[in-house]
Amino acid sequence: MNISKISSSQIEIIEKNNDYLSFYIKNNLVLSKIIGEFDSNLKEIENITNTKINLRGNLMIVRGDIS
Image (cartoon, rainbow, N blue to C red; front, side, top):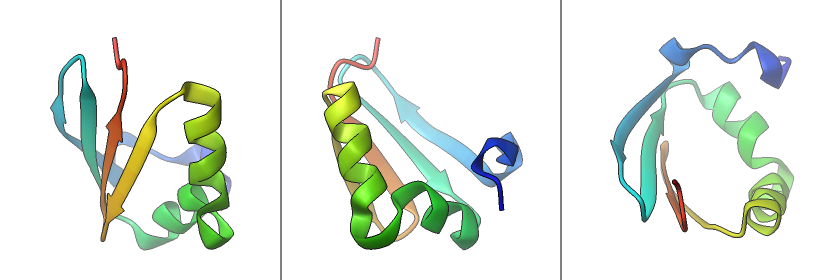
C-alpha cells in the first residue's frame, strides 16, 4: 500500500487543540505503514516535527505545537 493513498475515511480526528492532536487510524495496514518497523517512522516524524507521539492501539496522540 502506498502511504500517499491514505484517505480520510481511514483516519478519524478525535480532538485537536494547540497542544496536541489525537486521531484514530481505522485500518491496521495503514497504521503499520505510518509507524514503520520497530516504530522507526514514528521516531523520524517526532524528530522532524519536534513533537512527541504516543500510540495506544489504533489511537495516536501527537503532542507539541500543533498550530
